[in-house]
Amino acid sequence: MGRIAALTRNPVMIALVAMLAIAGCASKKTPNNAADLGLNGAGAATPGSAQDFTVNIGDRIFFDTDSTSIRADAQTTLSRQAQWLNQYKQYAIVVEGHADERGTREYNLALGARRAAATRDFLVAKGVSASRLKTISYGKERPVAVCDDISCWSQNRRAVTTLSGAGS
Amino acid sequence: MKSILKPLLMVAAMAMGMTAAGTLPALALVELNVNKGNVEPLPIAITDFQGGDALGAQISQIVTADLKRSGLFAPIDKSAFIEKITNPDAAPRFDDWKVINAQALVTGSVSKEADGRIRAQYRLWDTFAGQQMAGEQFFANDANQRRVAHIIADAIYERLTGEKGYFDTRVVFIDESGAKNARKKRLAIMDQDGANVRYLSDGRSIVLTPRFSPNRQEITYMSYESGQPRVYLLQIETGQRELVGNFPGMTFAPRFSPDGQKVTMSLLRDDGNSNIFAMDLRSRSTTRLTNSTAIDTSPSYSPDGSKVVFTSDRGGRAQIYVMGADGSGQTRISFGDGVYSTPVWSPRGDLIAFTKQTGGEFQIGVMKTDGSGERILSSGFQQEGPTWAPNGRVLMFFRDSAGGPKLVSVDLTGRNEQSIPTANFASDPAWSPLLE
Image (cartoon, rainbow over all chains, first blue to last red):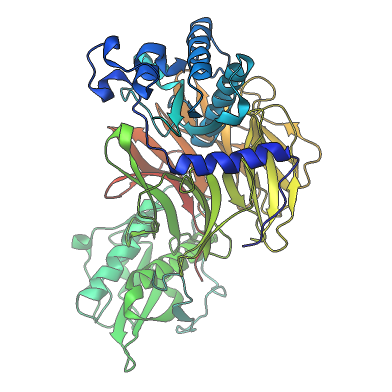
């Protein structure tokens, strides 16, 4: 099919997306939490491993309803993430944005994208190189908690920092 | 996949009766005024079509089901019939039908032609006037038996209501199976009554929001297959797919223009906001329609192509806006108490359907194109995404209850809600135009 010129995009960013896409091909899915990993405690993970990041640092932050601002508790988590990511620079990073089910599908894709971007921007502000970061929105299509009440919704309104690339 | 949308039906309308349709003097007696507030369903007797073994009864059954689900007709139970129709071409004993209060009567026959095609014909009778109102015959190949029945139902619907029917149509949707946190989502297509389901994707990638082209041959939808979610075009018959545009970020919420030449969709900006673009499918040129630091999404063209209605949260919460098709004159039209999204312009042009969230509920409603006259047609915990039947009288949407989404239709009165049977969970329905 015909290609059309990229819009008003920064050419550096385009090159970056292409590069990360290639990096992404070689990656494997990183488990999201301790339960997935079958670990009993923090001490089990090797420092600098993906398990270490998930278990000891915390790979996700949560948002208020229909909000994309980074809450105080989330800022603490993201600062910890940034410090870790700056120490272990071998990883490429994909930030996934998610929404709870109380919103329409298309709007929630946009909302998840905005949460991922806000998370990325915070990490960049804390010194993580923008060239390592990519975002993706899953809208409300990938809930982790599946009940129909407030306890689930709050867990699903999240941004998850996932690691890929060498060293994982 | 095999020719499901080809012009597979040779339709030969034939003036068969003493009077041709549309010229009857006495039609005032049997006519539904569907624009009255409270429509009393019209009692109608639909006899088994003669011949064709089980096929005759099957056609009658499909016609009956279509008309009944429209809410405008009350098919009379066959056990009440007095006259047994043996010659569907002869005038029935009208008194036998009047006495069971059948205001309209359908007779018909089906037979196999020498070339293997099916020939189906029907006659519609006005029992109180004692006259034939309409009569036509249709030819179809074996694979299109159900379509013949839907076409006959459309003809009866149109003759008695004065409006086009919507039974000979298809619906694309997302078939959903598996656990809620690991849902397999597949593109699927079926007849509007849930029959003849076919799958258009294998379920390996998340697919969402399919929309029909006005040419009935293509759909546009969003898929995660490349990693980054993007909008694609799919030729239904050949299975050929292509990416719509080559944008660096996520593209989503696609919809065709009424002439089928353009796709409008949202494009994610680097700052995390989303704007609306339109892409000409021939020249591949792209036009930016909105440029706000907000979420602008769910664009839908007016049927004349001159305007686009969309969702934006530029005012704080998601509301409905209308703009010119070039992006000019963006104006908010929804002002009710709640969050509004997924606006869809009626094929008649007079209404905009939407999803509204208020008081912990999701509502499906309609408003006039200036935002006035809001009416809620259906409420529930979790329901969204209305799509219009081509005649602008019925909406289909999806409702999440009992563990997953299912498809539901409701008419503009809000009193006739019907569930559409699907084998698995189903979401994101999009109604085709009338087939050709």
